[in-house]
Length: 217
Image 1 (cartoon, rainbow, N blue to C red):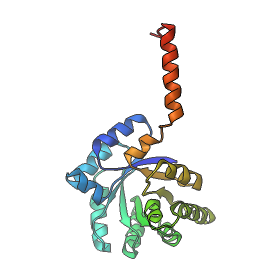
Image 2 (cartoon, one colour):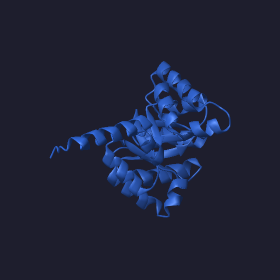
Image 3 (cartoon, helix red, strand yellow):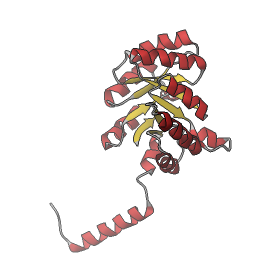
Image 4 (cartoon, rainbow, N blue to C red):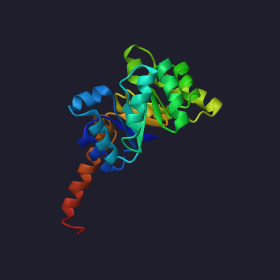
């Protein structure tokens, strides 16, 4: 499963990319707003750091506006993926971009039927928001499972990008459910490496090594 980081913070992106764990980046207007910087400047800088897919979301909600904005975003860097809302106009724009060879990420997916529509119009990625479903007492991971089954039934090429990830357990669950990608907040990525037995074991190893008085160097 590929790891994307869900942030617009340049330091977090750079640090995570240097670990070798990062395959791409997703952003949205809310994340860009938190950065306090110009939207296009942030996207260009992210794309210069991470060679993998970088999702940049349109602000328009109508077809003509999405097409105009999407073309601007696609020209910022070769690895930009145009992010579009799962609406009829968004699906129509996705189809247009697909024909033009522009990669797309259809976002705010909350049902298998929505995911089916996105695949039919040629979306590169579909982003089911599992955490937001959990918030309303629905099963976000079950949505991933259902989309996986539908996509496999018909050999759709659209990749399932699990979004709205809240916990390390979410990562395990979506990986088992067959997600192709998870887009994850930086703090959650770091938590994936944490385990109390790893920490205590390493502390014991260090203590035992020091007691030998030896040096590898």
